[in-house]
Image (cartoon, rainbow, N blue to C red; front, top):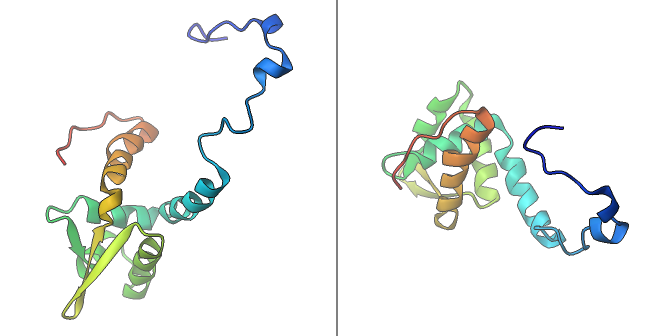
Amino acid sequence: MSPSAPAVDAAACTPAACTPAADAHALGADAAAQLAPVLKALGDPLRLRMLSFVATSATGEACVCDIASVADVSQPTVSHHLKVLKDVGVLTSQRRGTWVYYRVEPALRDALATLLDAFVPAVLGTTPEPTTH
């Protein structure tokens, strides 16, 4: 047992006291079903890098031609991954002439900033750098 772990009184832990209520979960079935496809889309390393590229762009958007520079893959592969992110509602797009520009869905900007600024460094074991949003 680690020094920081709280002591557990085994006598006080009855089945009724230790079993969480069925509705105690943070995510209900409907919320989990809606969230799972988004997290699955973010689970691909290339898509995560593309999303990070768009989200951290100085203009808040990125052209598909620039996004393609994130990795050494073909244009159809880039388009496929961007479509997946768009289909789950993480990105929006706008065609301007022959190019398509992508932005993070406005309703998700803060959540994505949290993911990039706090969650990623926590997983990597690094200290997050202060950012301005």
